[in-house]
Length: 188
Image (cartoon, rainbow, N blue to C red):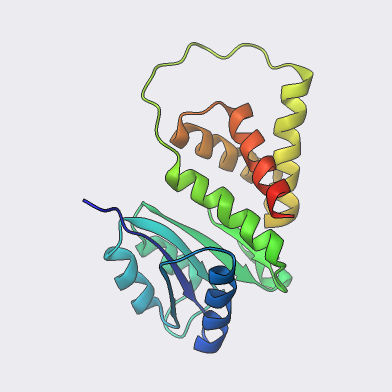
């Protein structure tokens, strides 16, 4: 059985969604669908095994937060909006990028999100973590700072995001933070 991971790009203006779709295709992504309504997003998501929804703050029939509530748990969301809209949002586990978007930030954020979806889950029990070294603390701090700057998360939200990614993938917090930093460096 083939797993279908999909990228859904949704903006009020279909032409904007198509431009972003084209940008992603130029950077090696495929199975991308552009649309301009929440109904289309939800329908496409329910036909897939997982993926990412990139969307604007508000589509014609729903706000981003409502769409997120209807997505299957195998989907992640990347909100693309003005800095003012992102400031007023309580994002939780929704990633965000402020407009205008820079290609390297978009690709780096996509890689981070896809890491969470693709990472094989380790089923082993782990012993209690040992005390972190200064180097390990610095790596985690750098990854949090990157997420805070690039995706407009608070320190607590960035830490929770790294923790969730770590738990979902079965990797340590330090390994996960390193992967976030590596994907950012490779996108620059």
